[in-house]
Length: 421
Picture 1 (cartoon, helix red, strand yellow):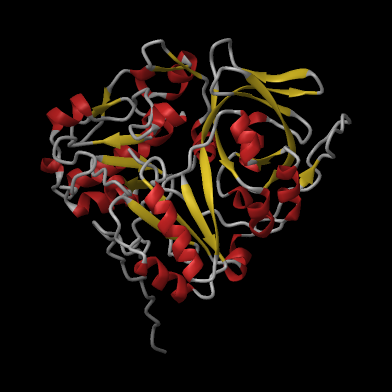
Picture 2: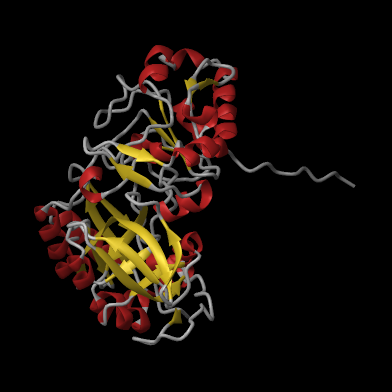
């Protein structure tokens, strides 16, 4: 499974901050206002990325395109790191059990890049080594400005990072934490994930440049523009996922297997992790209790539409389903990114005929029914994953977007007849 990436849109916004080195109690004084609409009119932003790590040739071509279009550009680095707890004035506020960690998404942002895209205060904080946390990340941690987040470096060291600001998720682009490259390197993090391009001479100039260097249509490279229409198959970020479905601690066994908190599984996965049957089609799966009703409704509508025969039940019930504790198949074990199946929020079907990386072989009517019930479809991920449906919690079948496979069929809005007097 591949998670689609959101273009980070950010601008200068009110933030809660702590003075560098302050030991006084600190609390957020003002939540940053959402700036997404304003940003689109002020700063055009494009993000170029590959499957997994950013290929060096993609990186070079993206910077070349930016140069040709008169735009600024920078290589971005993002991923997931392990957090063991939160401390406030020397007191533990949150702590994972010994040997367990919480997954937290981060983006490394150069202060010189943060200043034009996220505001001078964010750039300044990153410049002296503080970290910036999103409102969602703070809510999950019950964090306040001035707290210290304890992060596990790749060599096993525990490093305390000062939370110097809490800002709106629109500023962080969906990441829970912003850190500087120097902070990231101190944690052993250096994975390049994308190139961000901003402020071209014009949108058309950048589009022309991206085509001229050969990035448009490049295999397993995707370009996201801030002016793109909403994509029906864009998935939730890690922070939004945890806010909607809950956060768990996890550990990795010596064999490399992922194990998550059994108490979380018992409370959040249907059947306590054991597969149970859905009505109408005969699918058997263990799924997050929050998504189960939406999945049941989708399956029932598929059956009522006479499409139940499209399910390979033997394959789906043995190799598909929802809940699997594992890393993302693409670079997850290296970058620490857990599969959304670990939350039981993703449903796989017909895994043989719709294997990852192949042309999807699903009836588009099934895809659109799933979208209507709040699921994104993996068939349009950067590497197609046609077996995969992922809960997003909102209807997605009425978004007019030029999807490569199974674009939506937009229903006309009903018109009210006016009685003649």
